[in-house]
Image (cartoon, rainbow, N blue to C red; front, side, top):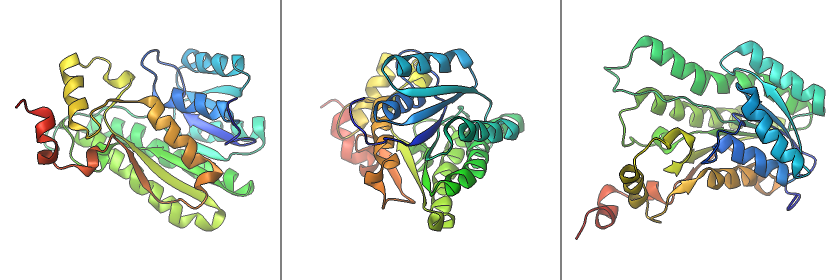
Length: 268
């Protein structure tokens, strides 16, 4: 372990399985949590993917175990929190990191797709929090992190209404929990990733990736590790007085208007 920023803490990371290169946010977060001393329950709907993450953590001297489950199922959400309590005796950190894409304008989205996206992206977070909060409270408090997106804060480059609306909901859910459960010593925050290169965009053409890179004021492309480092900070006692925030990790993108980055994307 490189440090003890999360020493003796127990974390539950949803979507922690490895999906190969590039690294996914859940995988990167679980790896860094373990490196910083946390015992981590690796939740994924694909056991083999989660076992890869577990093996890497154990080989590096960390502590982790796998829970295979579908967070769109209330039964599984309850079971994963129960398993965390049984295996580790407490829960200090919950990372809600699972999402599916949802395309189309509001006039184009079908009801079936809408229900699926809401169940995966938002309902799952609410269910996870519903069962995690009592266990956190019993242990003296904790930290909840919802992984949202800049698309939940601003209109993005795609017509993706279901995805964007659920990501906006994830951000406000964190605010609500921060207010409603602050006296339980539970902090809740939201990370809004920008244009990172992760498994869900590895199909993207080099031209599209370059376009996304150019619009960020820093002129660089983010990775899942950038999100994971933010998660380490917000989960740690270093952030003990931070709650109800939305932290964009986006290379400065939300600080700019389109014209502010015009010279970066339009040839002279």
